Length: 291
Image (cartoon, rainbow, N blue to C red):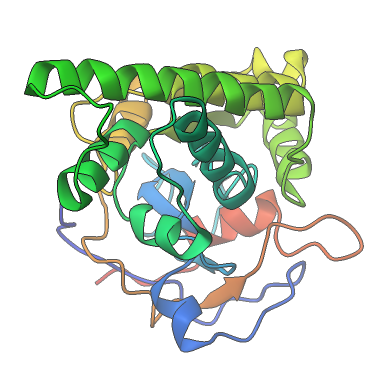
């Protein structure tokens, strides 16, 4: 991950519309949903490694081109991760679909929740399967050459995506609390919204269109799959999104240590338990110290 030239945190903000959730040591270090600043005028909402907390973090002072911190500026863009941010897809979505695919192919492989949690440290489903088989041994029904194995993995991933999309189309996996509300608020104020994911583009598009509806989907830009050469935690997909949307991607944090984060939330939240809103996001971009 690209290191930031400077990294700063929001200090002592008033979260008038948000309920703080006490942090545990696990929540500090391995968050599930992170709101972070990808540029002076955009915020990223991204997953960590499968925990159930959300950490809110920020850097730099004012929106791009406006050095007056006394003028409240909305973020130019909100960049959302998909899995674990829009929808809790991993444990009961992607993992189940992987296992159904393995069963169909009679591979004798099954990923339990604990193992899958470890595998989530590897970005990308194809990369995840490749790393797992390379470490534990390839199934007897798998081909022997490297090129054939790549094709084998691609076919497994294609079938897994089909099974996963069926779950989404049946709406068996709901949006996380507050997601639709925050997106509606952003779109209503002409803030650009994008979804950035290393998941298959078809799967991400299905989530956005089926769960948020076609009208919202038309206004949301999706960056997913293999559109960048390096998967998360490398920030390449966020840099692509920011530059495509016309937002300067000037700063990222290099480490996944959130011990000094100002606040921890379990979700975005809907009334009557709203954790934060678009005004809160604007506050992240305005009330902070620059190191």
